[in-house]
Image (cartoon, rainbow, N blue to C red; front, side, top):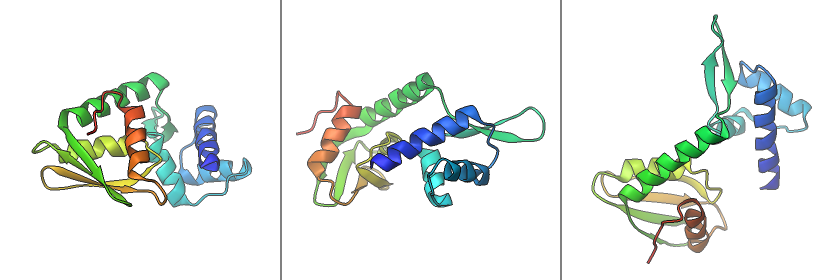
Length: 158
């Protein structure tokens, strides 16, 4: 886990201090900094960091990371979406099931995916009122609930 956090910090720093126009260039700079990762891992890291591409005003694009305030504002929206649709959470050894109000499973699933919880592998939104959350190996349902409460202080779980 520590290696991933260090790598994420390195990705942010490289993007902030260099004009990066491709994943290949970013992979090269990460390698020079001592982080050997695959393109698939880098893609997940970029998604997790909410990295986007902006126009350089001519014919190209380069990577940019959102400011801390932009990230906090985005997270506030996801938390509100979660609270608006959330009904209950139950779990077993590998999966948490989040019940939602009718029609809210997509927004609750997206919110959980975008909260950046290390405990979560990913989510699947049901057709209408349930979200399945795949937990990382070794993560308990209680640890998932604790992580959710850190992100969503108003979360009430029975």
